[in-house]
Length: 88
Image: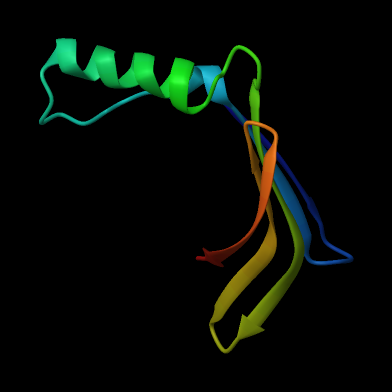
């Protein structure tokens, strides 16, 4: 599940994802392997029980012709990093 807000006056947005609701949809994996990947992702990689949200907060949106990129900060497991996201 996700939740997002957009401020039309200042082109920025915030998106939060419920890390415990992430799913693995890779059809090429056997169901048992998909379960292992999901378990590893939720427990080890995301530590979803201690860090329930993945958050992206843009600081600005840069438009070039018909394309746009959002510049902002992505927070996973409490660690924040600058990230640029291509918007479509």
